[in-house]
Length: 480
RNA sequence: GGCGGCGUAGCCAAGUGGCUAAGGCAGAGGUCUGCAAAACCUCCAUCAUCGGUUCAAUUCCGAUCGCCGCCUCCA
Image 1: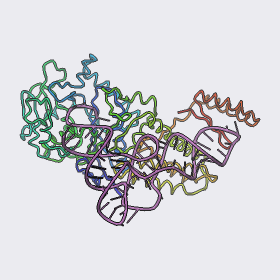
Image 2: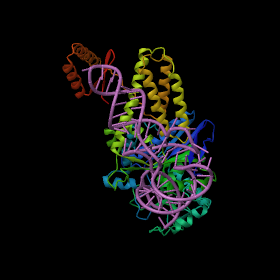
Image 3: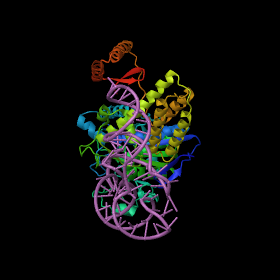
Image 4: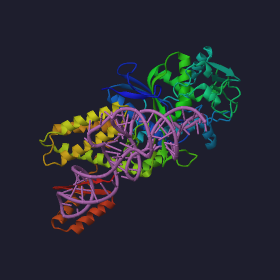
């Protein structure tokens, strides 16, 4: 029983064997911080979050590095390409680094809200210019790059394995009619390592080739090497970045170091919105700040993780609503379980076995290339076991309840992050008032004044408080 | 045009060469309850189409139709 992962590099599922026993080095392509994060970012980073959390659950110490791209990401590859951050800065009349600060903060605010674990290190491209220049020097020294008019290009013909990740071949790329080929490029697939900056360009650094700035792909190579070493375990990212971004990372890193770059490549698929590609130009982008006003973070996570990470996920309001409702069941079970434990439990056995079985099913599913969908199925089945046990006349033994609690906390909570921990009610006055109201309503019910009792319940409902009559007691809670 | 992926119940979505095709949402019936809520029980699919391989295919192969991604920036 061990972890198997689908490696884009080999197009097969492989046993995960880390470079160093007990340690996993993970690099994931981060955002370009020129706008707020959208639901597509959430799919990638929630999926990768589950990967990282599961590795930790499995006993690995994980060093998770995720770059923040704040320079060099062009709007397109032709001569007319603009730096995305610079473009935004010009539009908003801000310093580029103000744009970067704003959207970096916004990104982490959204990721925190979604309970995505912070990376161990979140380095910025602009903070690693020397490291990037160093790689360019190595590539030039090895003849794998060439300088032309103050810019430096990677020479793809000098890296025979070019295309091994994406399955592309150079002759096909050449045939692919790219309309505007940079005349300085020797081969259409050659890519920028360093770009000469015009005098008015606001983001530029000195280099052996004059003032300029690094190419987009280079930052990942430089920062992965700096924080994880020349060879590391897992490189994650969006499927749309396989080519050219990841392919170019491999080319420049391996050509420079002579060593393998990432050993396992995990690619998270894209999503569609109501069946169509999401794009800002299409006007159907869903920003996380807006989505989080409609759905809970746990529901968004459940929705994303209900699909395998390599599958396309279609986003609709209905699907997210369904996830929210489904999550409520999990939340109810978790609450009932905790309440029963607080009361001390009973004598009945059996729940411990269910907990062990659920944990086993969960682990088997996650070991199989992080099959969160099957893992969630195991959790929901386990919820049924728990609910049945709690509803039966014989209350489960305390030890069994605690086993169940631990299993649920570790799987649904620690790994998937879909367990909602409810804030305890701290207002003494509120509690006292609710006690009075509930006692009053109980008296009305005893007197068979049902109309009045129901009015009371409806009024509380209007105020956001739900009542639940159970045998012998009534409990209340704020509506989620 | 090149490369890759997908098509499973009303919706979302796992999975397997043969044993009851997970799970969630919605729906139907029932239990419990004064009612409601919650919870539990029961019911609800032959896996796009056509052909092939096989003792046996939803699962493998081929074709067709439809959808999507990448090849130019997007996570």
